[in-house]
Length: 79
Image (cartoon, rainbow, N blue to C red):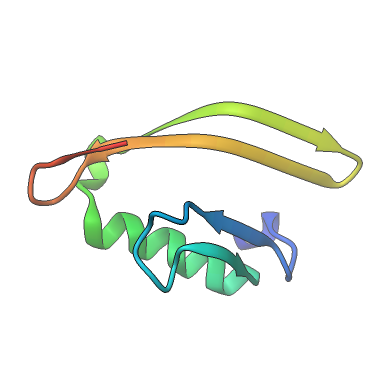
């Protein structure tokens, strides 16, 4: 994953998310840590599904809009 990301990659987390992760996060190592910890600590990793809703690309710039669905470790549904 690290090889796919620029050093200053931004990752925008919905503002309704738990702080301090909500909003814009920058830096490949930080973004990877947030992505992995969000899934590992909060969700049943076997049931997490991602839907890509939008892909925009131009030159070396790419943006994805995705929806993640799954089950929290306590059994609640997430979308």
